Image (cartoon, rainbow, N blue to C red; front, side):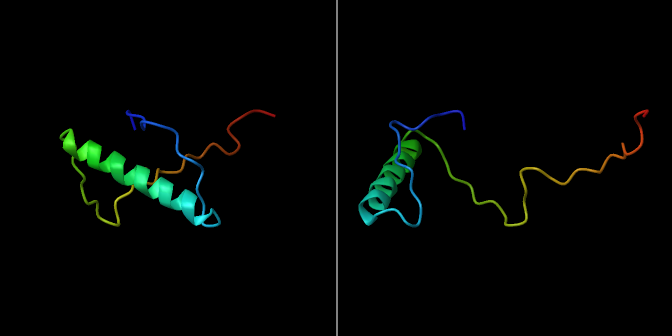
Length: 66
């Protein structure tokens, strides 16, 4: 992403206390609302679309001299 968040977010995991998770959730919601207000949009991407499609394997085994 080219834009950074307004402030640092706490590291959040499933074991984090509820208050930390709620703070992160509120920050995310406010960041998304601000993004949308500035004219940004959110697109739904199909489940089978990948950012890095599989590559054809290259055969380099045994190509270097001993």
